[in-house]
Length: 135
Image (cartoon, rainbow, N blue to C red):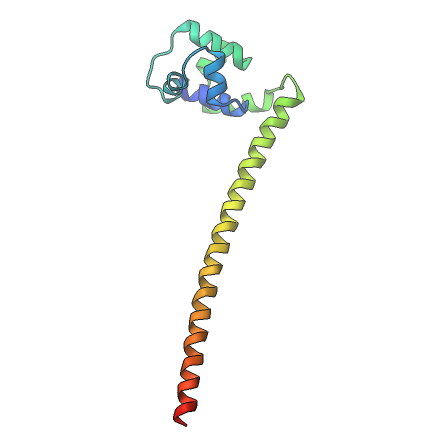
């Protein structure tokens, strides 16, 4: 992983928003977003500040790779229960939001199907009335 990917990964893992990071680094949101996108080179002093905010050694921030990302997660000991709870709450919130969106789509689809059936029933009733008048 590239340094900017490591920064984004750890930020998300710690449940920090980009806005929070930008504020802590005393920079614009757009400027911080460019760091995570890899669009700017990050100077050493900024990297040190980011590692301090994350509570991660600079070497780990710069040297994370795909193998030790899992090691980072396993060895992560949050400073307080707040971080752990906010991380799980964010995951739960995303899952709930996703399930809610799926349920809303299913409801919309069912409404359309019911409307179609109502139209078919109305047509069938019209046909029955016409047949009664003919017979």
